[in-house]
Image (cartoon, rainbow, N blue to C red; front, side, top):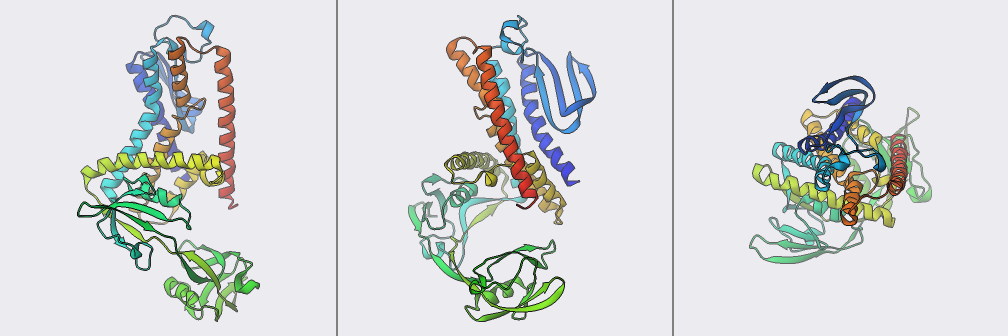
Length: 431
């Protein structure tokens, strides 16, 4: 069920994209041969106004085929409805409206989400105790204008600045006080000693038990006693289900011995160990005001979409610089469908599922619209570049040149698709 919904949502985004090309193509006098929903063999089709409409077998994707779009240059006839016989401005509009509708559908999804569930504003609503912010002049009601010289118009802008900032780097904020005064505040990084067991865990679906996944070789002063597969039960008699007290018991133990109750191979067992000391960054500790007002939500829907574009551009830059790993940023259709399926399959209130699905739809729609504008063959951005070149030269590039550009772009897209599929499969197998 979850996979089917994931495929459906991804298909809706692609249908919206192709619908943009189709609607403006018809409006601007382009001759359209076929509009198809889904991919693969045709299940059934019909004709209307000399356009073939098809429903295909594989429930993903959509396509629109313009007359003359793939004709060789020397075989182009004088039919005014043929794609390359239409004015350059008309072709540019037809090509642009696919990504534009994806972007607008993302804005609409944000607006529905914000007006239904609320949204946060870059205005400080709370400052956590024992945080970096608590040691500055920041106050509740301050509006953040810039973070490390980057404009902040949404809380996503702030989170993006924080995400790309190392824990050992200061954060400089330009804020506007409730009095209207602007001031600069710097949160310098600090570190705090914390004691933990030196393990990573996998929670059960009901959050009642935890299974040890990995054990730090340096845990228990370099002599680990916990093992992958152990189920945590208690620490010094404090049950794991009482997570706050359980974690506090470990954190307050220092270098004193701890008795950890576990299940190993289905058998109860108690092991004695000492917690490991870690130096953790002190959190910045800012929480933001929330609102559900409709009129400001319209502006925020557009601003959040722009924030996603900015984060995407910055991520691409860090990907090429090596600051981000490809497996942490690239996801293909399998990964997208899996993420949506996980949301649908999780046991949680319906309202939470709707919220997460709206968020994912908005995020992916905006990203899809923006990525399609990149100047990479065969994406729409490349076609816009070729129209620009045609306008400058006064004629189209030669068939050979266009074929070469197309082959290079196609190879790049295939490589990216294979990389995305590989990383999707690695994530599915937990590697």
